Length: 234
Length: 79
Image (tube, rainbow over all chains, first blue to last red; front, side, top):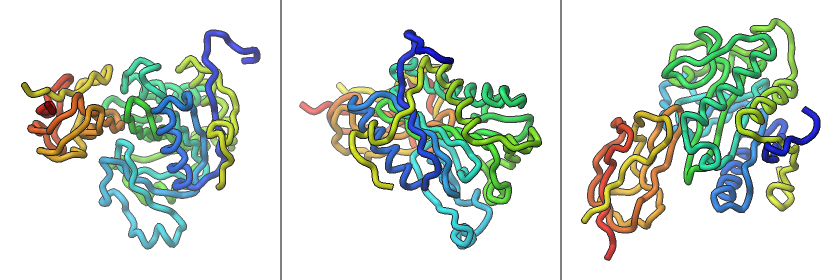
């Protein structure tokens, strides 16, 4: 790391910290619109969400294993969104990465884009001593038969929205409320595998370094107001 | 002559599943309008209209699989 690499394009990374899903969704959609018109360049958001269940375009309510009243009681929000895939959970202890990028600048290849995201997660996990990989036909990142990172993306006008969620230290009771991706699979977090704590910020920094290599970027920590050109109310 | 709507080249993607149409048969569309959503690799991709006109044929329905370059529908170009 260190000095700037002239062969890499400087790309904005906005660290949102902890944020509600709905607020972040509105923000993503606004940035997506601006990326499509070319008003802004590629931007990557990282965030840790407050507890939420989201249903993708292939989402089935049958894969929510508890009544919605229980979600409300637990303070877990519920959204239906445009991304691909079924139901997923986001919450504290999970790194969520939203790359809002024009895929025409990155090979115009959906599969390659997904693989780049998966590779960034696999590389990150390798850095903390976890041997993770892909499962053919099941996008996401796996440690043996357990899922550690989920993918769900939306592409309109060749610009991406949504992204990847990597479990760092997620409440297993919340995962137990869904059948992720409609599959009878177990999910797992980094801390379950390494047997000690690790900060979300550390995992985020490792992930960003992997993304820089995969996409030919050099991230510039950027404030939201700077990207939007306006003050932001949260 | 009708304009064929074909699955755009999505890169190293062999087939997609149709999520659903965003316009109905008979509707008038403008070039670039969102026509339908397809899904592959946990990614929803929005297929735009290749030209302006009337959607006269919907060749694939929700849940159907379409292979690389497959026919999705036809547009009768506006005069």
